[in-house]
Image (cartoon, rainbow, N blue to C red; front, top):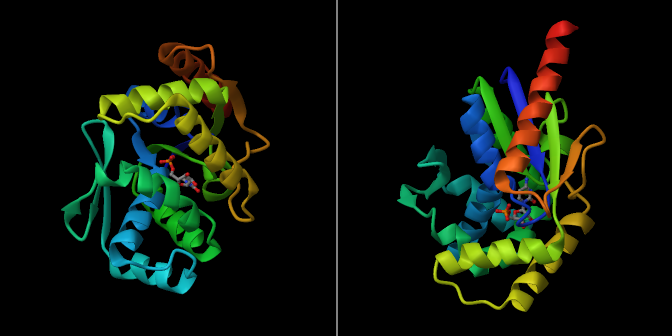
Length: 229
Ligand code: C5P
């Protein structure tokens, strides 16, 4: 296992990926976007025409496709069977259907296993998702939970989508985020919630730099305490 594991969990569009990436850069750590893993399996299942409620078939997709995750130019590059699908996994259809993968216990187990495997080869890692501090890395050195008002999250997501040519209205985006929040919070396995020992940060009125600054301060404090023990 890595010497330093930092987890960042939180709801959709709370800024986790951006902040995790920046924090990893500052600390010279690896970065893992676990949402990209759920998205990749979702895309592979869509392409294979698999029934999204059939756990056995979905597991088959996970086992028979070759997934490759690597950080490229600051973002998580994903390949399925040698094909670069980094852009495709962000398609709205994939975003909407990822909840089917996210709610199947055996699929989650496999993905958590892959996440631990990834961490075991790294010295330092910043990993982000929904269950990183609660399930995948319950012993992490530092845990964060980022959240923000849903209206602000919808505004941020709209800006991101517009940059990629998307024209969805703010209402549509907010509705989709609320649906995802509900499904992430209500599922029986790996539900979205802060770990008991997570530092919770509301980013609604904070800039990216301010959030990063707070996280860096917490990491420094916790690591200093660890050294003093
Ligand atoms: O973070 P992102 O929006 O890319 O995640 C895509 C979907 O994957 C989420 O809607 C969530 O349901 C699921 N997910 C999860 N556990 C994680 C990461 C993502 O259930 N650790």
